[in-house]
Image 1: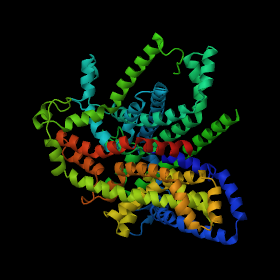
Image 2 (image 1 turned 120 degrees about the horizontal axis):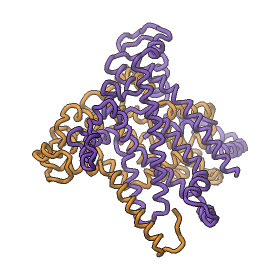
Image 3 (image 1 turned 180 degrees about the vertical axis):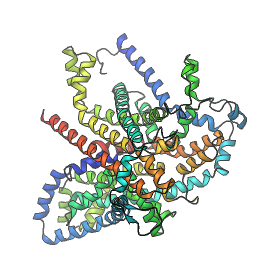
Image 4 (image 1 turned 60 degrees about the vertical axis):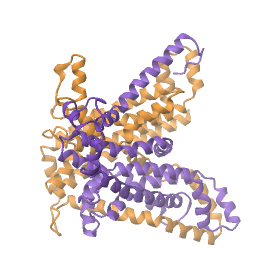
Length: 331
Length: 283
């Protein structure tokens, strides 16, 4: 569940956003209010914000600052005064033979893991549009995979991929494709895609729910009018429906795409980055360096690089989303 | 799509039947792994060895008993509650307070404070998980309930604050002005008037946060490494590594892990979806 990052980008893109206009108005009203009221409001404001600030400072900002510090020293988890090493961790990282395969896996994951759920989710949402009876049941069934813990999902899909008696191999036998039989998670050629398929199975439901909600706001009269004008299904979808849901579509794209950068749980549970690094991504690499090899500083450096890569994507997609939604309201 | 010409025409009926068939097949595919879990969990031991993943080929409670007692899943259930419930309550309370302040109260440093909280949505947990480990160890909070609860709370606060602020921003200003004229204090306006109006939002946030905390894997894996407070997610992972041959009890453990999620989700699916939609679409 990685709703966070895209929302974060939108919140940071141009400051306090959805409420900005309203806020300006209310600030003006506040300025007209008596001084005593304003003082009371300031006091209450500080009081109400204090808990969030203390927690965020203590358990987010301080460790985040330390992460940057760790990347420039040589810390092994034990010595209290680690030696300053400058850019040595970064230089080592770019010469690390494990880095490029992991980056490549991450890139494959981001591209396929974004496009596939978007296509499947959109198809499901269109199929469900105005379904009437049974709608709730289908919605629950499609969304359920997304709310399950990834550990449990990983366990069950490992059975489906079981080399000997797993359902996938049995299904291949049943349709006469036995030559495709393999140990899906143990074979370096298929492992990444097998785990990715599981992730797509889990994520599509999320895209579906969001897009289904967006479709509810599509102007039906416009769709009907275009049909009377002789537009076929594809044309209606491309020219009438998609433009209307484009801002939401881009928002889901941002969430799925940026989620791909920080993928960890499902790979960690299903393959642990193996076989022989075939499913390693930056996340599993950072974890194993830090917690299995005790290379704390080096693991932290990998994690930092991942953030540096992900943030520009989030911000760029958010800009795009904003522009599209402005065009939408202007037209 | 929208076919509303003649509801009884053969074309319309064929489309309806066809669509429902496709939807039923797809939803079976979506929930198939859950069906597989249930069927494997309730198998006899003998049947598991011969036919580990055959659907509903025998019935017995022995796997569930083994998982609950030998596999410690009974303890894990309790720990999952101890980890997720207090942090969910904290997220909702602290976010409601902060959301109101950020939406409607002026105070010095509001802009920068908001940016600092929202930064939590942009930075993956990964980036600071390693230093946080050593920090918790230094504070004596590693392997303690308060430690992991505070971390879980903090990871939920950025989204929670953002979410609650959106609800408070939507309320009309006339309400507080009227209350102020009637002599209500600022605290009374917040507590008596504003909070009740966002209770639906707070409820959606609670459900959403609970599921996230219950499902969280990395936080307990890293910060409660001892066995005492191990929740279902990491318990299931260790069970997977330790006894990979015993598929029956593993299936039962998986089932115990996902049942609360499924129950909460089915009972409250409107709130869950609303949580996602408000978080995503409204934002």
